[in-house]
Image (cartoon, rainbow, N blue to C red; front, top):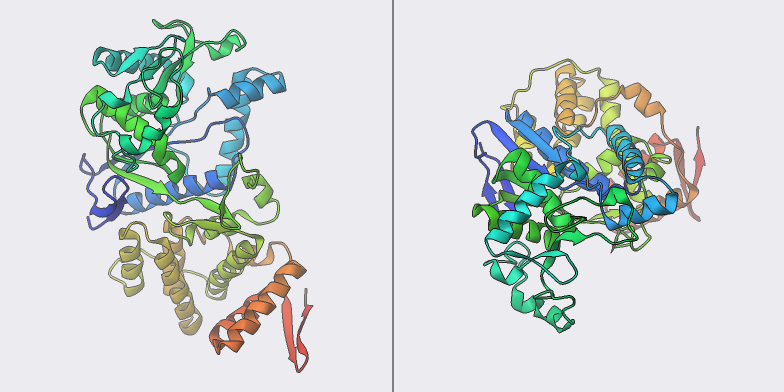
Length: 458
């Protein structure tokens, strides 16, 4: 096949061919379920939903594994704060995750393993690392990975041990051999609840975060997978440590391709719970429909930063309405996909180049323009079919166009300012597009010698 994917490990695009002909094994690191999912989680789930959809459109069978981290310091803390069991908390959060992902049209993974169901596999893997001299138990009872004994540590993130050596200035506590060593098994603390402890050859405790994914990935997909992915924030240390654990035990590459989606930012600062500048998926869906949020994410390339604002989401909604308007104007025929068609061929070329959704979306707008011009039901059918490859344009057009919230006055003012700037730059096509977008929302602009005013028609 002609698909090329950017491999974070090689820092380059490379042709993709699955290790097993016709079958792609893809592992994606999932959520730590102590709270509701935010937009950053949606971005990651959507990125790999798009990957999976395109692989399946390309005729490949995909086994998509997305794990659930259901034991963690934050989970224990939240469960104690709530006065509930860890299982009750994580069950509730997994259910909420499914509701949010379903609303966005994100396909359920083929397998969704929970870390707590794979503790024996984790202990087995830790034992293998210990036998190879890559793991040791320290004075506090924790079992650690000996980073300096694994050649090539840092190859994914590009961080050499010399660059990380600054951390060695930190005192080595409780017999830990090196500050860079990371925990594989955490010794239980007396203050921790019983449902956060498992018995092992190392005493009561629980697995470290990194060993969870290595064990689940190996158990469900084998020692080497086709694609291993997650958010850019997981590249180091999580994925770097996964490589050290899995390859240290097996001697084989963990993945032939590593994929990482870009951050979501707000005011150009990374959106995260720790910074307190995040929005949950539910908060956004209270103001914008799910198709708009999906389109907002999909029209940006998965590796690029995605800057959040209400203005950008409202722009996404109006852009999506232009596509639905074409489908409403000309009811689509059901068509068989013909990749030799010029529109379909350009769409495929875009997606085959590292899942180039921005270019693919541009083809949808070209096709919508042609539908409006020719009134062709066949082209309208192709528009709907290509949109479906991205999980878009499958709603009833008329219902979609009649739904949605009104535009805020702040957004209208900003759009008027943007239109004035476009006119000053003699970009009259952009100025007209803004006027038409506002008109589609029921906002009529009126130009005069003293400026531009507006009024709502609905």
